[in-house]
Amino acid sequence: MRSSRSVALSGVVLVTLSLLSCSHEAVVSDIYYGVSNYSFPEDFIFGVSTAAFQIEGAWNEGGKGESIWDTYVHEHPEYTPDKSNGDIAADSYHKFKEDVQLIKALGVKYYRLSISWPRLLPNGTSNNISTDGARYYRNLFEELLKANITPIVTLFHWDMPTPFMDLGGWNNPVIVDYFVDYARVAFNLYGDIIKTWTTINEPHQHCYQGYGADYFAPAIKSHGVGEYLCAHYLILSHAKAYHLYEKEFKPHQKGKVGITLDAFMGIPKDPRNFQDVLAVRSYLQIHFDLYAHPIFSAEGDYPTFVRQRINNMSLAQGFARSRLPYFTAEEVKIIRGSSDFFGLNHYTTYLMSPSEMEFSWSIPSMDHDAQVRMEQDPHWEKPGTDWLSVYPEGFRKLLNYVSDNYGREIPIIVTENGVGDKGQLKDYDRISYFNKYLYQLLLAIHEDNCNIIGYFAWTLMDDFEWSDGYFRSCLSTSVSLEQTSFAIAREIQKNSNSYLVLLH
Ligand code: FCB
Image 1 (spheres, rainbow, N blue to C red):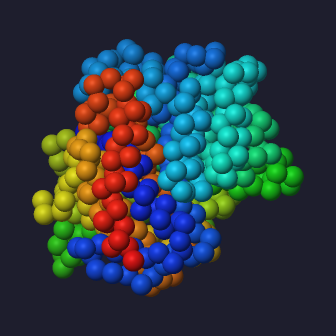
Image 2: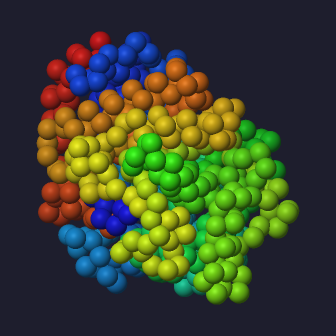
């Protein structure tokens, strides 16, 4: 799943968002979608998201060390369809002031971005802090604040320093302490002005695609073992960084720390078929609750269903022990409740039904453990990306799933949502997507009482979309990337005038 990703999700539709954030009276509507009288709460957070590797470029400047993505795409230029890499990307390292102006022009007041671990700590370890790297983020954060934009900072958006990968990355338990060291440096350097942190972006995509499979760097391809080890030490790293902040920084810095999880929503292929209903449960528990339950549930630890399923499968497959490691009682305790908010990334929904084996699965693997066949309804719109069909109702269902399972006290921040395109300049598909998904979010707030406090659109500008490179942006070189992206933004502002009228 998501093996062929093409998401050139530029921030242009933030025209819609900016309108909403400027006027809380604004309502979301769509010609195809009817009109809603619901509005966003007064203090609702609207923002845009990016990630360091996808936009910064300057891969070897200012003493920056290599990340696994630098190393991987340099060693395997054929990995992306356009043979591209992140060497220049959107050149945000040099053009961050322009980024800030763009965000300002969009009218949103929040910007979610990530720090590149090897830019700050070239070898990954805290004994060597890059002066240039440290200065870059300081300047960027200050520039944002000057423009009245609040930065929300992610510590890890997939770009692990390569020297740690050589030691096994997240599969090596020692990584936990090194991640905490890195978090300490970041809290020390920026905690005076950064008040909202997320530790890790989408552990599921990172571990499933990069450790279980080879769709993403580091491309370990250790199906059924690697992704669980990765999940395990990554969850622990998150929790320890959370407690470091609680103990040493929160008392005087008074900020918040959370984690961002991702989920595709599932709906039963045939809603009348109970087996399909069970397939959805199995998928969500294995791919989502595996991460959410230890952190956000009242009892903590991996969900019982997941524990039993993987233990049984491992046993039947002749393993000497479960492929899913165990937390100690002490670890369960420190992980439980280790997030001040629920960061949630969501893009699409799949129809689900049971399956014992599919052609693309390995044994063992997370897919085989879940035993769920996934497909999308051919009638659902697919504006650009193979894996991303538009099914807005799935978003509301997911928000309810989170609220029902993890309570309504924990605030949800949608830290990413968006859609890819085919590189066209007219942005109606994206406008329609945001409009429909935001409408579902309003329903979740007003009709379902979900505690959603923020929404970040992916993404501010065209970027390096991992295994898709810049392909779908129809841009020939990364140098022209930013300009073209801005051009689209201007074009859309013109085009969307008529659309904006619909919002009132
Ligand atoms: C998410 C990633 C983000 C971007 C979007 C399209 O899974 O967090 O970096 O690639 O998908």
